[in-house]
Image (cartoon, rainbow, N blue to C red; front, side, top):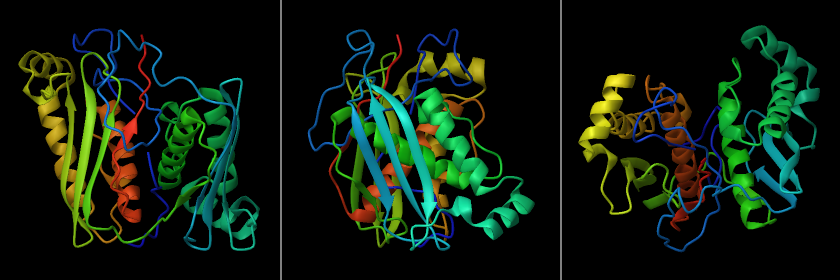
Length: 305
């Protein structure tokens, strides 16, 4: 699944509101920060982990794509100081180490076609990450949506590395053929009683199953919570059962296309926050499948009070 667009990366957002009060469009607003491990862990509740996912360890964390796309590959680092992101250095470099920001023809042509140049959106990405401290809180940049999804995904991975203090450079085998197997991800922290679980099955290099869901501590699905579904349907026009099933169907359909990517799936009205979580987690699982890494991805997701 060689891509003409730079979209995914290699490893790694989320939800709120059982009562459906005082919430945003889908009442499931939270953000993700995590680290990948092979350990299976029980979910921590919001009450006992009000600041879950917030702590970053000081250091410099790096990520790079292994394969050029239209002559460039992503190169990214963040610096964490006093537990905060103090620098964000995202860029696209060619084989000679020259930045796409300095490619005058590329910038001119993209500006004319899309209304924004690489120099403009790359600088905006970096500024916004330092400002918000959270890739999920950065607004999509019109004209650079695919690069935006890549940036968001890679920023999340670097934050996850910073949570565990793992300064080993992350290598992204972008565009590699998916390896057959089952790839699994789960959140560690409940948010209003639920945490995300997600798996994909790859067969003959294609995603044949997508199993995204929200489960409670007893392993029961949000899709089966009648009151939650009724209240959210009344407030947002769509229920968890409906949008979860739609997410899973759309991912399998999209990834059957030649240049399919989760970022191409249309936002589901009324479930925008859960949608963005789903896309980021799908990217992470696809990246794991590109490497054939079947270890469970554990997401130490940030949960607000």
